Structure formats: C-alpha cells, structure tokens
Image 1: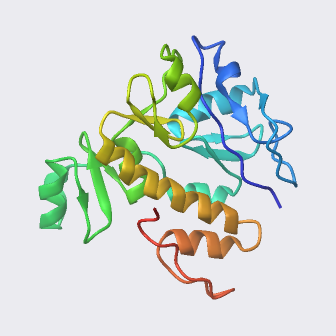
Image 2: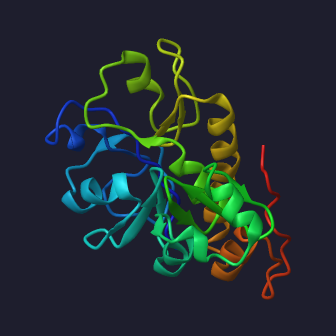
Image 3: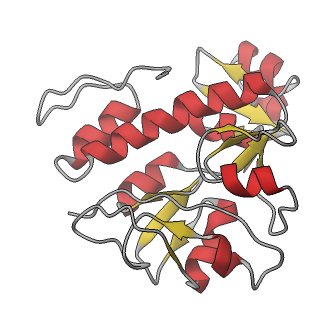
Length: 216
C-alpha cells in the first residue's frame, strides 16, 4: 500500500513551484516504504492540484493542504473545496445564522466562508486561511511552510501549505489537519477505517474507534 507524504511550498514564480514541492519520498510517485529523504518534483499535475486541494492524474493521488491522499474515494469524500449556495434557502436556522458570520454549524457539521458551503470542519477550517503563494518572500515562512507552526520572522501561522493570520483559526485547522494525518496512517491497513474514523464513526471492518475531534 502507498504511504503518507507531505508537500511543502517555497518559491518565487510558477517555475519555482517545482522547487517548493518537498516530498517525504524518493520520487513523485508514492512508494511502498516511507522515506524521509527530501527531493523536488516538477510534476505539473501536482503543481496544479496543490492550491485547489485537487487530484493529480499523473501521480494518481490527491492533495489536501499539502498532504497526499492516495485514495480517490477518500479524497472525493473529503470534498476539500467550497460550494456556491443560496444561504436563504437552507432549512437549518443555525446554518443561516453562521453563514452570515463565516462560522461553523455544530448541528449540521457544515461551515461557511465568503458565501461558500464546506461540508466538513477540516475543509471549512482550511478555507479560513489562504493557500501558500507562489512567491513566499519571508525566509521564516519558507522554512515553516509545509508543516504546522508559526513563522519566527513574521509570526504568521502555517498548517501544511495553508497560512493563517489568526492563531485561533490556525489551531482549529491544525487539529483537523492532524486528524487527517491519523486517517492517512490508517489507510494502508483499512480504507474503511480511515474514512469512517475521520468522519466520526467506528470502523465496521476492524472495529477501530473514531478519530478524536479535535485532535491536539
């Protein structure tokens, strides 16, 4: 089974996207064994997919905040992008209220940012930040991008390849990001366990518990 990879961003223009992808593997393709050697990739599919949490057909994996999701089923279930919606047509009164404030509905488990609907706390939390730009001028951010933490130079916060100005937004996104990491660790052994656990259910196949939410 394929292992877990992480991508990082540092660069100065579109050509430099090939320099900002850092893979924890020995090639752009996912390997069968984990490797922590760092290499660069010029995969055009990954370069295009990263800022939109999309799917790379060439490598046959998806990307979410820089984490590689090797299962198409799981990546589709994450649905890591917003959906245009007329909030006045939503039946849930709480959803209509939080939509006006770009907040999250704990009842329906849906969130809203800039008029768009997000179907999970992960995708909503990430949407409150911004994908790392192709031109990262801050030296501290270039070092920090790709993993959770604060830039020591400009004091912005990073969760994978998404950056935040608010520590509260970053902490919430980091909790969901780490839950996704746990799910991806489960994926090679049991795909149902990974998907069910991430969305708060026990696995019917291996009886594993749901992944705690939030995960610190």
